[in-house]
Image (tube, rainbow, N blue to C red; front, side, top):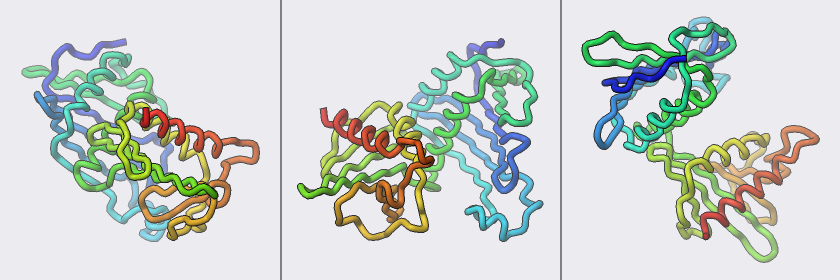
Length: 261
């Protein structure tokens, strides 16, 4: 195992999906990171791979644009410096890449002044991959490519309607809750992973979702795109023996109560 250099000028992270990932899903990117006093300087360049093997119709059918490559250069909130340093301090690295065609490839090149870059590879990819997914989402938000994650939960019964909104801003790692239009206290960022990981375990029947704001008794979710999913109707269990929907309902109420304290 190897340690991260004590001091470095620039970190270049190169990522590529596994060799078994087919087009149009396969991609790679280079991410240059430079720590500044109050910001993280970023140079991001993402390219999709082997799409020349497909015709245009096949790419569009999978929900992609014909040219999904993306590049951006700018600044991220300094909160990302802390998260990067925390990850680098606890991860284990190797000097050599361990070949595995079923795993994504991650290479870290630490640039030190007047010296050749030191290349390291995470011993375990899972936590590093999640960090990279989050920082990519932060880049997409700051650059205007995508909006922050939004989730609206409506619980309607005979007594009335309770509307709760959950917002995760990856650009500054803020997770907030509003209930009946009133902002509640911010919650620890760790709840973002818990929320998204739990909610997206359900199956969403997109073709059957409605654009009409719910008025009848039931529980509903919307992700800010105008589509509404009803628990047990257009938002269903992924398997006949799973209990995902009660878990989602319990977690949403738990987060709302926690934010209201």
